[in-house]
Image 1 (spheres, helix red, strand yellow):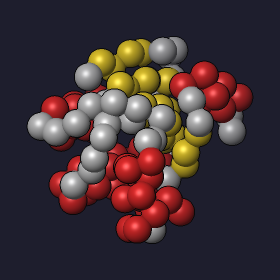
Image 2 (image 1 turned 90 degrees about the vertical axis):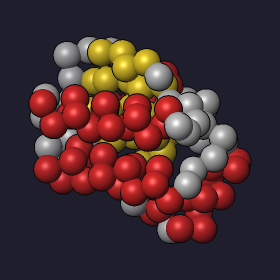
Image 3 (image 1 turned 45 degrees about the horizontal axis):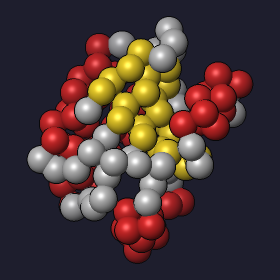
Image 4 (image 1 turned 45 degrees about the vertical axis):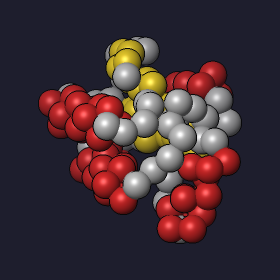
Length: 112
């Protein structure tokens, strides 16, 4: 994983698969707990599957960023297999998705 401080208020995270996925999300959650001014762009293009633990961590991150910190979380680069998990679980309706990293960064910068 790489956490890139893209700007003062935006962090870009490149995600992979487990076991690193869980550790990486824990690091992102810790960073967003310390700095509550961060919008988050989570790039899932390197993620090929999600398990229930991954989903629980994503929901925890969403709650922290969007509800507690009143910031924005966008997911980008979701492949077909992972998208299927979001659809089956109904999570496609609560997460905000964008097509690619440049679109996600632009949306966060413009306040979309």
